[in-house]
Image 1: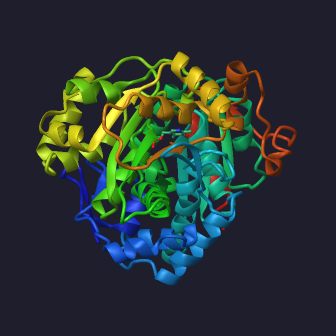
Image 2 (image 1 turned 90 degrees about the horizontal axis):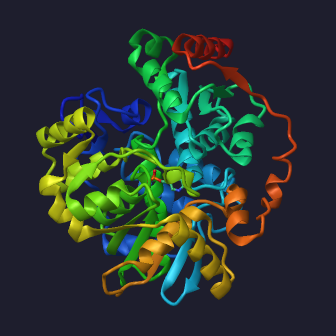
Length: 466
Ligand SMILES: *Cc1c(COP(=O)(O)O)cnc(C)c1O
Protein backbone atom coordinates (compact mmCIF):
# COMPACT_ATOMS: atom_id res chain seq x y z
CA UNK A 1 0.00 0.00 0.00
CA UNK A 2 1.27 3.44 -1.01
CA UNK A 3 0.72 6.82 0.62
CA UNK A 4 0.16 10.18 -1.04
CA UNK A 5 0.44 13.71 0.35
CA UNK A 6 -2.61 15.98 0.63
CA UNK A 7 -0.57 18.65 -1.17
CA UNK A 8 0.48 16.39 -4.04
CA UNK A 9 4.12 17.46 -4.22
CA UNK A 10 5.90 15.02 -1.92
CA UNK A 11 7.27 11.58 -2.81
CA UNK A 12 4.84 8.66 -2.64
CA UNK A 13 5.92 6.49 0.31
CA UNK A 14 5.15 3.10 1.82
CA UNK A 15 3.85 2.51 5.35
CA UNK A 16 7.23 2.28 7.08
CA UNK A 17 8.51 5.55 5.63
CA UNK A 18 5.25 7.32 6.43
CA UNK A 19 5.52 6.00 9.98
CA UNK A 20 8.97 7.55 10.43
CA UNK A 21 8.40 10.72 8.40
CA UNK A 22 5.31 12.19 10.08
CA UNK A 23 4.83 15.31 7.97
CA UNK A 24 5.29 15.11 4.18
CA UNK A 25 8.10 17.17 2.62
CA UNK A 26 5.62 19.48 0.88
CA UNK A 27 4.07 20.33 4.26
CA UNK A 28 1.09 18.03 3.58
CA UNK A 29 -0.20 14.98 5.41
CA UNK A 30 -0.05 11.41 4.15
CA UNK A 31 -3.10 9.31 3.29
CA UNK A 32 -3.42 5.86 1.71
CA UNK A 33 -3.72 5.91 -2.08
CA UNK A 34 -6.98 3.99 -1.70
CA UNK A 35 -9.03 2.86 1.32
CA UNK A 36 -9.04 -0.82 2.32
CA UNK A 37 -12.66 -2.01 2.62
CA UNK A 38 -13.75 -4.80 4.95
CA UNK A 39 -16.74 -6.98 4.08
CA UNK A 40 -19.67 -7.44 6.46
CA UNK A 41 -18.59 -10.90 7.61
CA UNK A 42 -15.14 -9.65 8.59
CA UNK A 43 -16.63 -6.71 10.47
CA UNK A 44 -19.14 -9.00 12.18
CA UNK A 45 -16.32 -11.33 13.25
CA UNK A 46 -14.80 -8.52 15.37
CA UNK A 47 -17.68 -8.67 17.86
CA UNK A 48 -16.40 -9.95 21.19
CA UNK A 49 -12.79 -10.39 20.03
CA UNK A 50 -9.98 -9.03 22.22
CA UNK A 51 -9.03 -5.45 21.39
CA UNK A 52 -5.46 -6.33 20.41
CA UNK A 53 -6.63 -8.89 17.86
CA UNK A 54 -8.88 -6.37 16.12
CA UNK A 55 -6.04 -3.81 16.26
CA UNK A 56 -3.64 -6.19 14.50
CA UNK A 57 -6.23 -6.87 11.78
CA UNK A 58 -7.01 -3.20 11.21
CA UNK A 59 -3.40 -2.01 11.18
CA UNK A 60 -2.48 -4.97 8.96
CA UNK A 61 -4.75 -3.53 6.23
CA UNK A 62 -2.53 -0.43 6.06
CA UNK A 63 0.99 -1.86 6.13
CA UNK A 64 1.02 -3.29 2.61
CA UNK A 65 2.58 -6.47 3.97
CA UNK A 66 5.70 -4.61 5.15
CA UNK A 67 5.27 -5.91 8.70
CA UNK A 68 4.64 -9.62 9.22
CA UNK A 69 1.18 -10.28 10.67
CA UNK A 70 2.69 -12.34 13.52
CA UNK A 71 4.91 -9.39 14.51
CA UNK A 72 1.95 -7.04 14.35
CA UNK A 73 -0.11 -9.37 16.57
CA UNK A 74 2.71 -9.54 19.14
CA UNK A 75 3.17 -5.76 19.18
CA UNK A 76 -0.57 -5.14 19.57
CA UNK A 77 -0.83 -7.68 22.41
CA UNK A 78 2.11 -6.00 24.15
CA UNK A 79 0.82 -2.47 23.59
CA UNK A 80 -2.61 -3.13 25.08
CA UNK A 81 -1.40 -5.31 27.97
CA UNK A 82 -0.43 -2.08 29.77
CA UNK A 83 -4.06 -0.93 29.92
CA UNK A 84 -5.82 -1.04 33.27
CA UNK A 85 -9.06 -2.58 32.00
CA UNK A 86 -9.54 -6.08 30.58
CA UNK A 87 -11.67 -4.72 27.72
CA UNK A 88 -9.00 -2.06 26.91
CA UNK A 89 -11.70 0.44 25.83
CA UNK A 90 -14.95 -0.52 27.65
CA UNK A 91 -18.41 0.82 26.82
CA UNK A 92 -20.58 2.13 29.65
CA UNK A 93 -24.25 2.99 29.16
CA UNK A 94 -25.20 6.30 30.83
CA UNK A 95 -28.65 7.03 29.37
CA UNK A 96 -31.18 5.29 27.07
CA UNK A 97 -29.35 4.74 23.77
CA UNK A 98 -26.25 6.63 24.93
CA UNK A 99 -22.94 4.92 25.66
CA UNK A 100 -19.58 6.23 26.81
CA UNK A 101 -16.53 4.66 25.17
CA UNK A 102 -13.80 4.90 27.83
CA UNK A 103 -10.49 5.45 26.08
CA UNK A 104 -8.59 6.49 29.21
CA UNK A 105 -7.44 3.22 30.80
CA UNK A 106 -3.87 3.56 29.51
CA UNK A 107 -0.85 4.60 31.62
CA UNK A 108 -1.39 8.38 31.25
CA UNK A 109 -5.20 8.33 31.61
CA UNK A 110 -5.95 9.90 28.21
CA UNK A 111 -6.87 8.42 24.85
CA UNK A 112 -3.51 9.26 23.30
CA UNK A 113 -2.10 6.12 24.96
CA UNK A 114 -4.18 3.91 22.63
CA UNK A 115 -2.25 5.07 19.59
CA UNK A 116 1.09 5.96 21.16
CA UNK A 117 1.66 2.57 22.80
CA UNK A 118 1.35 0.82 19.44
CA UNK A 119 3.22 3.53 17.53
CA UNK A 120 6.28 3.15 19.81
CA UNK A 121 6.42 -0.57 19.18
CA UNK A 122 5.97 -0.14 15.42
CA UNK A 123 8.76 2.45 15.28
CA UNK A 124 11.16 0.32 17.29
CA UNK A 125 10.41 -2.63 15.03
CA UNK A 126 11.11 -0.71 11.83
CA UNK A 127 14.26 0.97 13.23
CA UNK A 128 15.56 -2.41 14.43
CA UNK A 129 15.01 -3.88 10.98
CA UNK A 130 16.90 -0.98 9.39
CA UNK A 131 19.52 -0.83 12.12
CA UNK A 132 18.77 2.86 12.65
CA UNK A 133 18.09 5.13 15.61
CA UNK A 134 15.73 8.09 15.83
CA UNK A 135 15.22 11.12 18.04
CA UNK A 136 11.70 12.25 18.74
CA UNK A 137 11.23 15.87 19.63
CA UNK A 138 7.80 17.12 20.54
CA UNK A 139 6.03 20.05 22.15
CA UNK A 140 3.16 19.41 24.52
CA UNK A 141 0.50 21.46 26.23
CA UNK A 142 -0.23 18.47 28.44
CA UNK A 143 -1.36 15.03 27.25
CA UNK A 144 0.81 14.16 24.26
CA UNK A 145 4.13 14.51 26.08
CA UNK A 146 3.26 12.10 28.86
CA UNK A 147 1.81 9.57 26.42
CA UNK A 148 4.97 9.73 24.27
CA UNK A 149 7.36 9.38 27.22
CA UNK A 150 5.34 6.47 28.65
CA UNK A 151 5.20 4.73 25.28
CA UNK A 152 8.90 5.10 24.37
CA UNK A 153 10.48 4.61 27.82
CA UNK A 154 11.24 0.99 26.98
CA UNK A 155 12.54 1.77 23.48
CA UNK A 156 16.04 0.65 22.54
CA UNK A 157 16.23 2.74 19.40
CA UNK A 158 14.48 6.02 20.14
CA UNK A 159 15.37 9.00 22.31
CA UNK A 160 12.51 11.29 23.27
CA UNK A 161 12.77 14.95 24.22
CA UNK A 162 9.51 16.66 25.15
CA UNK A 163 9.30 20.43 25.56
CA UNK A 164 6.58 21.85 27.76
CA UNK A 165 5.86 25.41 28.93
CA UNK A 166 7.29 25.89 32.43
CA UNK A 167 4.56 26.30 35.04
CA UNK A 168 1.73 25.88 32.53
CA UNK A 169 0.86 22.16 32.70
CA UNK A 170 -0.98 20.47 35.57
CA UNK A 171 0.97 18.63 38.32
CA UNK A 172 -0.36 15.28 37.14
CA UNK A 173 0.56 16.02 33.53
CA UNK A 174 4.07 17.22 34.46
CA UNK A 175 4.78 14.27 36.74
CA UNK A 176 3.78 11.82 34.03
CA UNK A 177 6.66 13.27 32.00
CA UNK A 178 9.23 13.82 34.76
CA UNK A 179 9.00 10.67 36.90
CA UNK A 180 9.96 7.93 34.38
CA UNK A 181 13.59 7.03 35.17
CA UNK A 182 14.77 5.63 31.82
CA UNK A 183 17.80 7.32 30.25
CA UNK A 184 16.20 7.75 26.80
CA UNK A 185 13.31 10.01 27.85
CA UNK A 186 13.68 13.68 28.73
CA UNK A 187 11.19 16.33 29.82
CA UNK A 188 12.36 19.89 29.30
CA UNK A 189 10.65 22.88 30.91
CA UNK A 190 10.95 25.85 28.56
CA UNK A 191 10.74 29.40 29.87
CA UNK A 192 7.94 30.30 27.50
CA UNK A 193 4.46 29.36 26.26
CA UNK A 194 3.21 26.30 24.41
CA UNK A 195 3.48 28.28 21.17
CA UNK A 196 7.17 28.95 21.96
CA UNK A 197 7.70 25.20 22.48
CA UNK A 198 6.03 24.46 19.15
CA UNK A 199 8.16 27.09 17.42
CA UNK A 200 11.32 25.46 18.86
CA UNK A 201 10.25 22.06 17.51
CA UNK A 202 9.48 23.57 14.13
CA UNK A 203 12.88 25.28 14.19
CA UNK A 204 14.61 21.94 14.78
CA UNK A 205 12.72 20.28 11.91
CA UNK A 206 13.56 23.20 9.59
CA UNK A 207 17.30 22.94 10.37
CA UNK A 208 17.94 20.12 7.88
CA UNK A 209 21.56 19.49 8.90
CA UNK A 210 20.50 19.10 12.53
CA UNK A 211 17.49 17.05 11.49
CA UNK A 212 19.73 14.56 9.69
CA UNK A 213 22.43 14.48 12.42
CA UNK A 214 19.99 13.36 15.14
CA UNK A 215 17.52 11.52 12.81
CA UNK A 216 14.57 13.59 13.93
CA UNK A 217 11.18 11.86 13.88
CA UNK A 218 7.72 13.12 14.75
CA UNK A 219 4.92 11.57 16.79
CA UNK A 220 2.44 14.42 16.87
CA UNK A 221 -1.12 13.81 15.85
CA UNK A 222 -0.46 14.19 12.14
CA UNK A 223 1.49 10.90 12.18
CA UNK A 224 -0.59 8.54 10.07
CA UNK A 225 0.13 5.48 12.21
CA UNK A 226 -1.47 7.17 15.19
CA UNK A 227 -4.69 7.65 13.28
CA UNK A 228 -4.69 4.05 12.06
CA UNK A 229 -4.29 2.78 15.63
CA UNK A 230 -7.33 4.85 16.64
CA UNK A 231 -9.54 3.26 13.98
CA UNK A 232 -9.64 0.07 16.06
CA UNK A 233 -11.92 1.34 18.81
CA UNK A 234 -14.57 2.51 16.37
CA UNK A 235 -14.83 -1.07 15.07
CA UNK A 236 -14.69 -2.59 18.55
CA UNK A 237 -17.42 -0.29 19.93
CA UNK A 238 -19.71 -0.48 16.89
CA UNK A 239 -19.60 -4.27 16.65
CA UNK A 240 -20.29 -4.55 20.38
CA UNK A 241 -23.47 -2.51 19.74
CA UNK A 242 -24.66 -4.60 16.80
CA UNK A 243 -22.72 -3.45 13.71
CA UNK A 244 -22.65 -4.32 10.88
CA UNK A 245 -26.36 -5.19 11.30
CA UNK A 246 -27.09 -1.88 12.95
CA UNK A 247 -25.78 1.66 12.44
CA UNK A 248 -23.96 3.47 15.23
CA UNK A 249 -23.20 7.18 15.72
CA UNK A 250 -20.17 8.71 17.44
CA UNK A 251 -19.67 12.08 19.13
CA UNK A 252 -16.00 12.97 19.48
CA UNK A 253 -14.30 15.62 21.68
CA UNK A 254 -12.17 17.24 19.01
CA UNK A 255 -9.00 19.31 18.88
CA UNK A 256 -6.64 18.45 16.05
CA UNK A 257 -9.30 16.35 14.24
CA UNK A 258 -7.17 13.18 14.52
CA UNK A 259 -9.58 11.16 16.60
CA UNK A 260 -12.70 11.99 14.60
CA UNK A 261 -10.80 11.46 11.36
CA UNK A 262 -10.08 7.91 12.56
CA UNK A 263 -13.88 7.52 12.77
CA UNK A 264 -14.19 8.78 9.22
CA UNK A 265 -11.53 6.25 8.17
CA UNK A 266 -13.55 3.46 9.84
CA UNK A 267 -16.59 4.56 7.83
CA UNK A 268 -14.61 4.54 4.58
CA UNK A 269 -13.49 1.02 5.49
CA UNK A 270 -17.11 -0.14 5.57
CA UNK A 271 -18.19 0.36 9.19
CA UNK A 272 -21.85 1.47 9.11
CA UNK A 273 -21.53 4.77 10.96
CA UNK A 274 -24.65 6.91 10.80
CA UNK A 275 -23.31 10.25 12.06
CA UNK A 276 -19.90 11.52 13.12
CA UNK A 277 -20.06 14.39 15.57
CA UNK A 278 -17.42 17.04 16.20
CA UNK A 279 -17.61 18.42 19.73
CA UNK A 280 -15.51 21.42 20.70
CA UNK A 281 -15.19 23.64 23.75
CA UNK A 282 -15.24 27.46 23.55
CA UNK A 283 -12.46 27.20 20.96
CA UNK A 284 -15.02 26.43 18.27
CA UNK A 285 -13.21 26.93 14.97
CA UNK A 286 -14.61 23.69 13.53
CA UNK A 287 -18.28 24.17 14.52
CA UNK A 288 -18.07 27.74 13.16
CA UNK A 289 -16.58 26.52 9.89
CA UNK A 290 -19.25 23.79 9.68
CA UNK A 291 -21.99 26.42 10.06
CA UNK A 292 -20.52 29.18 7.87
CA UNK A 293 -18.24 27.48 5.34
CA UNK A 294 -15.33 29.69 6.43
CA UNK A 295 -12.45 28.34 8.51
CA UNK A 296 -11.33 31.41 10.41
CA UNK A 297 -8.65 31.46 13.12
CA UNK A 298 -9.12 33.38 16.38
CA UNK A 299 -7.09 33.54 19.59
CA UNK A 300 -7.08 30.52 21.91
CA UNK A 301 -9.09 30.73 25.14
CA UNK A 302 -8.05 28.60 28.14
CA UNK A 303 -10.82 26.17 29.22
CA UNK A 304 -11.39 23.25 31.59
CA UNK A 305 -10.69 20.92 28.62
CA UNK A 306 -7.15 22.12 27.77
CA UNK A 307 -6.39 19.33 25.30
CA UNK A 308 -8.97 20.86 22.97
CA UNK A 309 -7.70 24.44 23.31
CA UNK A 310 -6.44 24.79 19.76
CA UNK A 311 -6.33 27.36 17.01
CA UNK A 312 -5.43 25.16 14.08
CA UNK A 313 -6.96 21.73 13.62
CA UNK A 314 -4.15 20.10 11.63
CA UNK A 315 -5.80 16.85 10.58
CA UNK A 316 -8.75 18.69 9.06
CA UNK A 317 -6.51 18.99 5.99
CA UNK A 318 -6.93 15.24 5.50
CA UNK A 319 -10.70 15.59 5.40
CA UNK A 320 -10.52 18.58 3.03
CA UNK A 321 -8.49 16.41 0.68
CA UNK A 322 -11.00 13.54 0.80
CA UNK A 323 -14.21 15.56 0.70
CA UNK A 324 -12.85 17.84 -2.01
CA UNK A 325 -12.24 14.91 -4.36
CA UNK A 326 -8.50 14.68 -3.64
CA UNK A 327 -7.86 17.95 -5.46
CA UNK A 328 -4.36 18.78 -4.21
CA UNK A 329 -4.22 22.22 -5.90
CA UNK A 330 -7.29 23.31 -3.93
CA UNK A 331 -5.81 22.03 -0.65
CA UNK A 332 -2.54 23.86 -1.38
CA UNK A 333 -4.48 27.07 -2.00
CA UNK A 334 -6.49 26.68 1.20
CA UNK A 335 -3.39 26.06 3.31
CA UNK A 336 -1.60 28.99 1.71
CA UNK A 337 -4.56 31.22 2.50
CA UNK A 338 -4.53 29.95 6.11
CA UNK A 339 -0.82 30.76 6.46
CA UNK A 340 -1.23 34.20 4.90
CA UNK A 341 -4.54 35.45 6.26
CA UNK A 342 -5.59 32.99 8.98
CA UNK A 343 -8.66 31.84 7.05
CA UNK A 344 -9.89 29.87 4.03
CA UNK A 345 -13.17 28.84 2.39
CA UNK A 346 -14.08 25.17 2.84
CA UNK A 347 -15.59 25.39 -0.65
CA UNK A 348 -16.49 22.22 -2.55
CA UNK A 349 -15.83 20.02 0.49
CA UNK A 350 -18.69 21.69 2.32
CA UNK A 351 -21.54 19.59 0.94
CA UNK A 352 -19.98 16.27 1.98
CA UNK A 353 -18.93 17.73 5.34
CA UNK A 354 -22.50 18.80 6.14
CA UNK A 355 -23.85 15.42 5.09
CA UNK A 356 -21.43 13.22 7.00
CA UNK A 357 -20.74 15.28 10.11
CA UNK A 358 -22.45 17.44 12.65
CA UNK A 359 -20.61 19.89 14.89
CA UNK A 360 -21.38 21.81 18.07
CA UNK A 361 -19.47 23.56 20.84
CA UNK A 362 -19.91 23.59 24.61
CA UNK A 363 -19.44 26.65 26.81
CA UNK A 364 -17.72 26.36 30.20
CA UNK A 365 -21.07 26.73 31.96
CA UNK A 366 -22.62 23.99 29.82
CA UNK A 367 -19.69 21.67 30.57
CA UNK A 368 -20.00 22.20 34.33
CA UNK A 369 -23.79 21.72 34.18
CA UNK A 370 -23.43 18.54 32.16
CA UNK A 371 -20.92 16.98 34.56
CA UNK A 372 -23.17 17.68 37.56
CA UNK A 373 -26.34 16.64 35.75
CA UNK A 374 -25.00 13.30 34.46
CA UNK A 375 -23.46 12.51 37.82
CA UNK A 376 -26.79 13.22 39.53
CA UNK A 377 -28.84 11.18 37.05
CA UNK A 378 -26.66 8.14 36.55
CA UNK A 379 -23.79 8.41 39.04
CA UNK A 380 -21.34 8.56 36.15
CA UNK A 381 -18.47 11.07 36.44
CA UNK A 382 -17.32 12.55 33.12
CA UNK A 383 -14.18 14.63 32.64
CA UNK A 384 -14.56 18.08 30.97
CA UNK A 385 -13.45 16.84 27.50
CA UNK A 386 -16.04 14.07 27.59
CA UNK A 387 -18.65 16.53 28.84
CA UNK A 388 -18.17 18.66 25.69
CA UNK A 389 -19.32 15.64 23.69
CA UNK A 390 -22.33 15.10 25.93
CA UNK A 391 -23.34 18.76 25.49
CA UNK A 392 -22.83 18.60 21.71
CA UNK A 393 -24.98 15.47 21.53
CA UNK A 394 -27.74 17.31 23.37
CA UNK A 395 -27.64 20.07 20.75
CA UNK A 396 -27.94 17.61 17.87
CA UNK A 397 -30.69 18.55 15.41
CA UNK A 398 -30.84 15.14 13.82
CA UNK A 399 -33.32 12.38 14.50
CA UNK A 400 -31.67 9.64 16.52
CA UNK A 401 -31.93 6.29 14.77
CA UNK A 402 -28.80 4.65 16.07
CA UNK A 403 -27.17 4.14 19.43
CA UNK A 404 -24.97 7.14 20.22
CA UNK A 405 -21.43 6.63 21.47
CA UNK A 406 -19.62 9.47 23.24
CA UNK A 407 -15.87 9.10 23.18
CA UNK A 408 -14.40 9.68 26.63
CA UNK A 409 -10.88 10.91 26.00
CA UNK A 410 -9.63 11.49 29.55
CA UNK A 411 -10.05 10.14 33.08
CA UNK A 412 -11.53 12.74 35.47
CA UNK A 413 -8.54 12.26 37.83
CA UNK A 414 -6.29 13.79 35.18
CA UNK A 415 -7.94 17.18 35.78
CA UNK A 416 -8.52 17.20 39.55
CA UNK A 417 -8.67 20.99 39.96
CA UNK A 418 -11.34 21.47 37.29
CA UNK A 419 -13.34 18.51 38.62
CA UNK A 420 -13.17 19.79 42.19
CA UNK A 421 -14.30 23.25 41.13
CA UNK A 422 -17.30 21.74 39.31
CA UNK A 423 -18.39 18.90 41.62
CA UNK A 424 -16.80 19.78 44.97
CA UNK A 425 -15.05 16.42 44.98
CA UNK A 426 -11.43 15.80 44.04
CA UNK A 427 -11.26 12.53 42.04
CA UNK A 428 -8.47 10.19 43.18
CA UNK A 429 -5.91 8.60 40.88
CA UNK A 430 -6.35 4.89 40.08
CA UNK A 431 -4.32 2.69 42.49
CA UNK A 432 -1.70 1.81 39.84
CA UNK A 433 -0.67 5.50 39.80
CA UNK A 434 -0.48 5.74 43.58
CA UNK A 435 3.18 6.85 43.59
CA UNK A 436 2.89 9.45 40.85
CA UNK A 437 2.55 12.41 43.19
CA UNK A 438 5.52 11.46 45.39
CA UNK A 439 8.06 9.87 43.01
CA UNK A 440 11.19 12.02 42.42
CA UNK A 441 11.14 14.21 39.33
CA UNK A 442 13.86 14.75 36.74
CA UNK A 443 13.50 18.02 34.84
CA UNK A 444 15.80 20.03 32.64
CA UNK A 445 14.97 23.72 32.42
CA UNK A 446 16.07 25.66 29.37
CA UNK A 447 15.56 29.17 28.01
CA UNK A 448 13.36 29.78 24.97
CA UNK A 449 16.41 29.56 22.73
CA UNK A 450 16.71 27.27 19.72
CA UNK A 451 20.51 26.85 19.86
CA UNK A 452 20.41 25.89 23.56
CA UNK A 453 17.66 23.34 22.98
CA UNK A 454 19.45 21.88 19.96
CA UNK A 455 22.66 21.44 22.00
CA UNK A 456 20.67 19.65 24.69
CA UNK A 457 18.93 17.33 22.21
CA UNK A 458 22.16 16.45 20.43
CA UNK A 459 23.99 15.73 23.69
CA UNK A 460 21.23 13.44 24.87
CA UNK A 461 21.04 11.63 21.53
CA UNK A 462 24.82 11.13 21.41
CA UNK A 463 24.99 9.77 24.96
CA UNK A 464 23.04 6.75 23.89
CA UNK A 465 24.74 5.87 20.61
CA UNK A 466 26.30 2.44 21.25
C1 LIG B 1 -5.72 15.20 22.30
C2 LIG B 1 -7.01 15.18 23.05
C3 LIG B 1 -8.25 15.49 22.43
C4 LIG B 1 -8.35 15.93 20.98
O1 LIG B 1 -8.08 14.91 20.07
P1 LIG B 1 -7.74 15.25 18.54
O2 LIG B 1 -7.36 13.96 17.92
O3 LIG B 1 -6.61 16.23 18.60
O4 LIG B 1 -8.97 15.84 17.94
C5 LIG B 1 -9.40 15.40 23.19
N1 LIG B 1 -9.36 15.05 24.49
C6 LIG B 1 -8.21 14.76 25.12
C7 LIG B 1 -8.24 14.41 26.57
C8 LIG B 1 -6.98 14.80 24.43
O5 LIG B 1 -5.84 14.51 25.07
